[in-house]
Image (cartoon, rainbow, N blue to C red; front, side, top):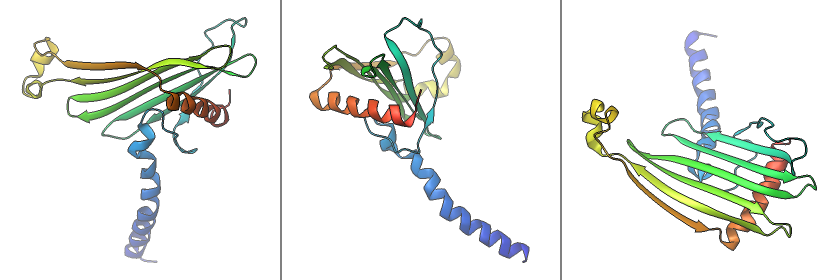
Length: 175
């Protein structure tokens, strides 16, 4: 087989494989409280920071990162000694511009009756475009970033989704 034929075959294979690999970079996987596919992200164990007498039995953590433009999402489920959900923490960051990011932080705990109690905080952080023309001004603190933040209690649909995400994380990232 000639080199030219090998290159054409390699290119055709790459064109078949590349779209499947890039599907994991889809923006919807990085939206807060969305259910990621089974094959996206990496399970990352948390160091044991609580004594054996803690009410928390296990942590289940999934981390997802994209290639540029820069998306990052971490989901952590906490399970108590009875095997019930005890807490849920999620952080999602999306680069929305050259000097701008949006973020979502979700914190939830479960009461003894398994009702979810928690909050969702959505935020935006932006630097002025003039920072690009004066990087030393950025380092010296001459530019002020604009930060907006909105915190609200979890809605009923978000509470249901958190229960589903905890079940998903327990299967996807066993402790």
